[in-house]
Image (tube, rainbow, N blue to C red; front, side, top):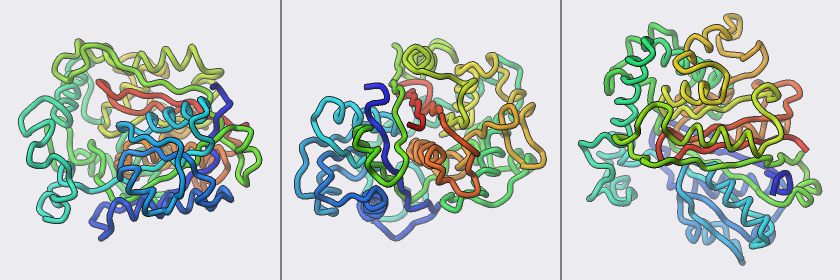
Length: 383
């Protein structure tokens, strides 16, 4: 499958950290129509559909797609969807897949939505919430491992803060980002504590908005208007045990599986890339991805980012040239469950990133997901 399947285009509605007054389906449809049109396609050209929210059957009806030969609703983060769609194209189950994701401020990820009766209805399983109010899963799990990180490596909260500051500085260059106000380290350190040691700015921002992508064969993508972005390698990594409270250490999780497999399957690595996307749903996740990818040793990601901080630009540029989450990541563009990371990578490699454009960008590495059950990786390049 390597380099034989490509992303032909990517589009976004942009994101807001408030109630947009719209449904997930309408947001997904807007992004989908934009992605289809920018690739010079029509609804009759789409024969595959892949996304998390809304369900494929709902979006098919909303868009009026007359005929599908394949569809899927994998679990987030979004590398899963791109990998699944690419496999379906390569296997011949379909020719052209619309991959989509509508991020939504729902009752499970924001208290404001919990108070809204309409959003409560739109949140599946609210009467039997998972992971529940008092477990070590989800946000509580990352809080525990953030404390372990500080304890094990004798670091301070400023190491988490540099991730948040870099995200915000990059988001200020991104008109699609939800959070674009300037932020200083003092702002970070004085922010409301959510679960010690993680504060408000350590956790991704619940947003309304959507992204959409066109995945097809590389041969066909080369006949479409935009430069194709080739999928060089993709992997979903998981180890056992994979529950937050059973993981043996900061290194005994799916991230090393992703890194080892990408390095074995892909044709380039961190010395060759032009832009890097470590997932930052919680700030400690990004630090661990940076360390596992090989940029620095365990516990050294904070000092590493500070060494590559560019005061004149107010952000991180690795070796003076490689931006880290130039769209603002989950912490400032919004909690897109990885779709924003992939969309920005596609736009960078197509030369369509506007003010954020990396000159001559040819290769991107995306390390998405967290520690436990959803570590994922994607290598993209021009072709």
